Length: 378
Image (tube, rainbow, N blue to C red; front, top):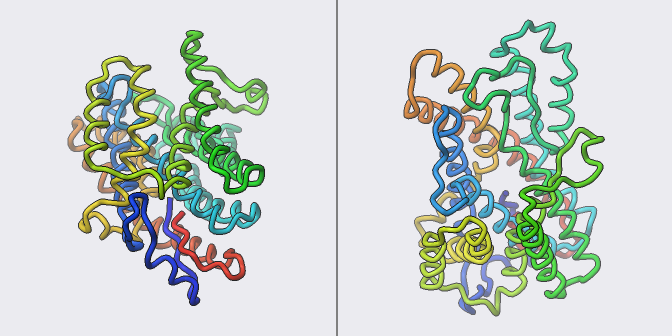
């Protein structure tokens, strides 16, 4: 979820002008950063309700704001990461770029959570906290993007007890999507049907589970590693991701239309069945997100180059839990806790961007293939 700087050579000027999906010319200015920050803030807002014991709003049948925001993230990721792969289809450099985007910020957040926040707010003795295997398991597994685990004595009496960072569950699925994309890229090259097949396979898998009445299915054997990887989540998230990939691959053939977005969004809001809403969202969310990012008015492009979205996403939940833990002890309500969480999260996200994520992203330019100077936005 980042912006990578273009190489400083003659061919890097390619990014100045591109042909968009409707055949018109547009510049590198786009609203991807704005949309990602908006999605990250939507996750924060969505979580702000259960954090204090309130019902989480569902603007779409069966889909909370948080779930819709995650769908936007995966659709945007598919679009931009596919562009990165197409510009430099080298597995090693592709993996290194993805790692430089995901892991530096994640590792710093984990260190602050486990070694600073945990000891400060835990309800057990520090000797017990640091002597518990769960403390180091949380740090070790989290550092590999494998999720979040409870920390001893932390937030055990919150309305969402034991949840330290409930947002990190998506990262392992995001990493899996990168692996699938690289695998497809090696097998099918630039052939569009291979990417479309991936999305259809995910959709078919989810539909089969739905028809079979199986709400959730874990990947066999993961429990032996202390992990939970769910087939249904792989299935439905892959549809959003590879829908984004497909929109990039067919960007010259699929017109982006605001009226089509309006019809799709209204249709999604009118659906009153959760399973059917999921099916509709597979079409509406990726198309609407990419249309907005590419065709948004200039006002929404001003955030470009300041991508706080990842920092907001990874810091919001532990900050919210901490604010709820402290605030509810003093009788503060939802508004105060949410505003305090928002302010602290934005501050941490800005620090993460300028001092951790952006410096790490500068290293990505060194991974450019010789002679490739195209603009790689992810």
